[in-house]
Length: 220
View 1 (cartoon, one colour):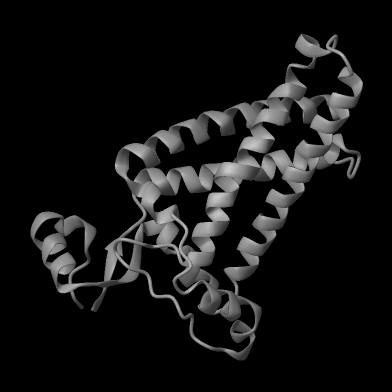
View 2: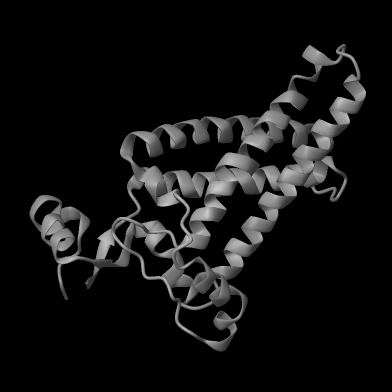
């Protein structure tokens, strides 16, 4: 295997990542205001901004799902047990002892096993939960007359809030992990430039140099 800098984060993926992060931060900020946890923004503007950011995020997610399915990048999120315990041990224990990360990115799999499981859980559990409950809350007037509507409304609100806190916890953990191991700049730079250091087989290296030279940086 040869270590080379390869563009593993295409332009749309980088746009989607940073746009999603900005919208999630807006939603967390306004959501905390709507729940009375701060008074930095009035209730009315917080509600409107929360709804606008939520609808924008849903549109972004729809495009991202379409992009993942049509480009084949969904394979990076397929969970695997191969190396999972080593990666989990690294984050729980070895990372605090200065050990090197046990996972090396490959051309065909840029997420380590723990990342793949975490991102998959976000995409198929937390994000749909917050979509569905958010849209149900937004459309309360359409179903407020159904039997047991108040109890169902409370359940919807609680699920929405729990999913939001889970996503907030992921954001905090995600940012924290950017500060350990390599420098913060080294962690963030690939999601800005698109290029990251990965292991290539001789066949993968030859293919990129011959057919997609723009995706692989020349040797120093």
